[in-house]
Length: 83
Image (cartoon, rainbow, N blue to C red; front, side, top):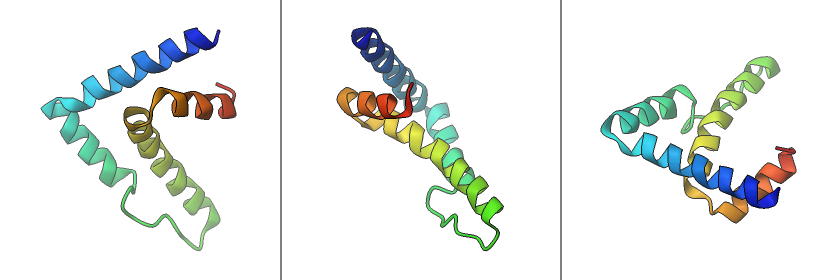
């Protein structure tokens, strides 16, 4: 089971890298960086808005993490989330 999970993570990481290494993928990633508030504070007095903005940011951080982290680290994260 662990080997299967590791293989799936490796394949997913490679898929993300291939997708976002193209010129089109780089443009999409740049747009997501802005839309997902990567370089912006998500703080807001409205706790619901802040939670929504944090969720948007988490999507972008997940994409970047999948592409940059080593398989062992991805496995630890996946296991912690129950994936």
